[in-house]
Amino acid sequence: MARGLTLVLVAAAAVAVVGSAAHGAPDSTVKTQTLKLKAPAAGDVTVAHFLVKAKTKKAAKKKPAFKIGNRASLGADFMVVASVKRPKKGTWDVTAVVAHRKPPAAFRVPQRGDAKPVLVVIDAQYAVVNPSQIVNTVEINRVPTFACNPAAAAAAWYRGASFALTPAAQPFEFGCETARELPFEMDYLDKIGGQGCWLGGDYFMGQKTEDIFRFQCNMAGINAFELDFPAGTTITNHLAPPGFACHFQGAEEQCVSANQIPPRAVVQINLRFTAEVQENSFVGLKLSLDHGATFPEQYRGHAPD
Figure 1 (cartoon, helix red, strand yellow):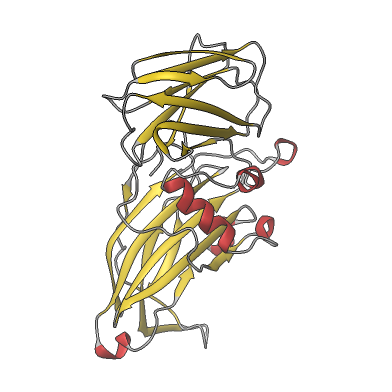
Figure 2 (cartoon, helix red, strand yellow):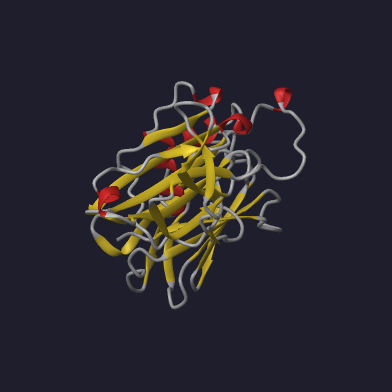
């Protein structure tokens, strides 16, 4: 989950009069509002969250309909899925994931500027409350303040041809896992043409001062890595991965290899500390392509909890 962090607040656009679906003619009694979800970069996803509250008792009795207003312009390489829950009468809790596939280079069409936003059309009988989104979650991002359960049931709102055989649960799970900086299924990142890594940790034999950290990346050329722990952490010993020469100082562990880590290989390192690393705290992962001279690729994961 790489460089930088981004949290974009999204607001519902002004109410607009649309045509009647039944007759294909304008109908002034049908009013909608449009919520704009920023499209992620190709090979990445956006995770959005908002509440929908009924404005009338009549609207509170039925689930609002959600439609993608710009389906024709999204094309083959987008998929939009969402989990909709009803925490109380008249209120719906919505988490949506926008996946953007990066086509193979041989078939790539040159892009002019950023992709246009995904437009979610909602009946104006409902108010959109507290909308927010995290764009490009494979990168390091601000952890969502809303619940994002990877196992929640999800349905497809839009499915481009590239995602014809993709179940809605797959991009939703991936979106929540990457937004929360959790280990994720590398197969899905490959499917959307993205590049990235996950990092996770476990206690060794139940000993809270000795941890096992693992990471996996799908890019080539990595020959060194660095783990950065929270301030106040002190490493006292390590068991280096095969083929790596490692050294530690304070809260930092750095390992260098004469060879490249094969893409998708899982790298494991055992570390001992003077005291337990703060549960579920962030651990930084830096990657080098030049044997540790520079570390341009940066990701992060969690300490054990």
